[in-house]
Length: 89
Image 1 (cartoon, rainbow, N blue to C red):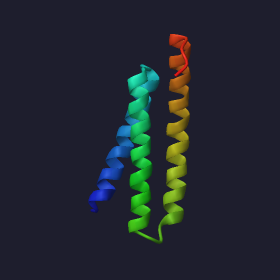
Image 2 (cartoon, rainbow, N blue to C red):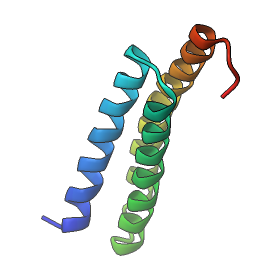
Image 3 (tube, helix red, strand yellow):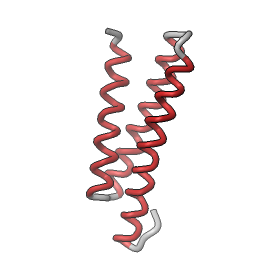
């Protein structure tokens, strides 16, 4: 199995975990970690598409689903933090 693929899967799973954790117990640091994992997933996914041409459609569909779910939960966590702290982040 490709090392980049293993890294991509691990980062995506950590991103999902981080997002859920930020939603359950929101804090500024957890949100920044979530954003970093999301960015790393995007970059490694882009690198995978470049290294394996021909799988763009499948990668885009899977990526869209991932970023929709993780993005929605991250925004919900950010709103939850704003309500709890009465601060703009």
